[in-house]
Length: 326
Ligand SMILES: NC(=O)c1ccc[n+]([C@@H]2O[C@H](COP(=O)([O-])OP(=O)(O)OC[C@H]3O[C@@H](n4cnc5c(N)ncnc54)[C@H](OP(=O)(O)O)[C@@H]3O)[C@@H](O)[C@H]2O)c1
Image (cartoon, rainbow, N blue to C red):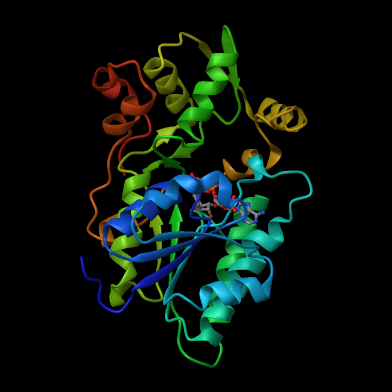
């Protein structure tokens, strides 16, 4: 397929969960895709895709980043780390704030006209969680750098709710926890509201926005079609994976205690920053998928296919009952 205007796209963070779905979709549409990675050898599977190059690069070096972005006429920045998954000593400020600013600055000064950026639902410089605060500061830094004098950079920002799909860190994480805990799983923040969005819907949003002028300058919150309590999602995972467990809902003080303790354990099963993240409703006031004419897919249509032992449809009525549809 011929693409008007944009031919070559640099994808930062294209080896991650979302990138593994996005990069093949870009390649299929005929774009030349340059995926920047710290670990080229680990992601050689992407090289089978037509038009995809995998480039070993340190995105924290201005010279390296500039040399790579210079070769593209659009950039997608997917780099990010959830606070629960940060390695010790990793600098989230450099990743979530400085990198978006530097990418926008390079786009502006190199005349790269298009920049798509992945933030997160509820991102705000005032957010209580460090993850959401960093993402919010990153959005502001990116917009300010893109808006300085010089050739215009058309920026579009996406703020997804937790994303689900094969190899997600949502249902797969619950499934791992349920597999490890034999009888009862204590659950912090059981009443937190979430509207998970399917990874392919997020990919469609990025593809639709790429060359659509109506999206320039906009930010889109992206949510699934229904809102659930966290405890419903964990119970659902238990049912889909066939693991009979008692889910023990913790009250707020116990949830706080749980976060403080579990973040010290190997693998950090739950962190204080996640506790803070779950204090904000993970739902969209306006779902950007609707604005982009994408019909969001439900959990029940997808999750049993990659997680389950069957019976997904049977569970649907129990899933949708309490938190309702948006
Ligand atoms: N997954 C979700 O549920 C979700 C929800 C809302 C928002 N988001 C946002 O959407 C974006 C994509 O999410 P994702 O789940 O695909 O992320 P991911 O799987 O964690 O991967 C993102 C990529 O970031 C790169 N990266 C990580 N740490 C880095 C570091 N210190 N320096 C340079 N690069 C680094 C990695 O690339 P290399 O290892 O190849 O260098 C990795 O492949 C992120 O910005 C995330 O915050 C995700």
